[in-house]
Amino acid sequence: MEKSWYPGLMAREEKRLKENLKFIDLVLEVLDARLPLASRNYRLQKMLGDKKRLVILNKADLAEEDITGRWLEVLAREKWPVLAFNAREISGLKKLEKLLLVNRPENLQYRRSLRLMVVGIPNVGKSTIINRLVHKFAVKTGEKAGITRGPQWIRLRAGWEMMDTPGLLSPYFKNNDSALALAAIGSLDFKVVDEENTAKWLVERFLTREKFLSLIKYYVLADDYTGKSAARLLVEIGLSRGCLQKGGGVDKIKAAQLVLRDFRRGVLGRITLEKPEDYEEL
Image (cartoon, rainbow, N blue to C red):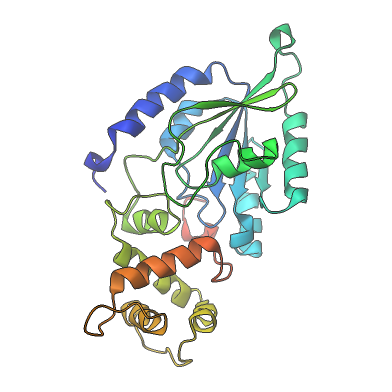
């Protein structure tokens, strides 16, 4: 992927994040549990350096539990605590709060508040985590990348303050699959990767991971999908859900939007888009 796609806004926010890091005691790095490595911004890793942090695999309820367990083992090789997190469960929130307490610096100057920063790429659920910690909707959330605009200081509780930052993507992607995966989870704008190709890539993942039965059930498709391409199956989903153009042809863009929206909502069942075994370097 060419560097030229990189928005000027992200470059400015990178600079602002660097400037604010010196005021932070503890960083929460948020990754998507369905895409732990591809949803990690390695430029951000370099910026953080040795800054103390917690690594959160968010949306764990949408990922395959056994594969998440393997990712936790891989990430635990780093020196930072790692937590699989489901914002819908109170038990996960309690575990996160406990980790924050355990990792609080012992001697804060002038007995000031603990200053936290939450970082990650767009749409991995940073603002949702903050809202759970605050126990109210302190910051906007949504499927669209770029909901958070500019750093925001939020008081979580007595003695805790957190800075929410806009999602920051790297200007480079490892390969086209990485870009399509990021688009599928909603982290990459469709001005960079189009919706139809992203949806076909996602349907192909369901096929190769032998998860297509969940699509058959949800979209009421024919059981016999052997030998059918992802493009053909996307057309059948469009037919099943009435995504039609004038004249009766399938509106592939609408069908793609439907599949991507349903995937992000979690109604297509649990699926992890990458495994540790996919990476030779791990």
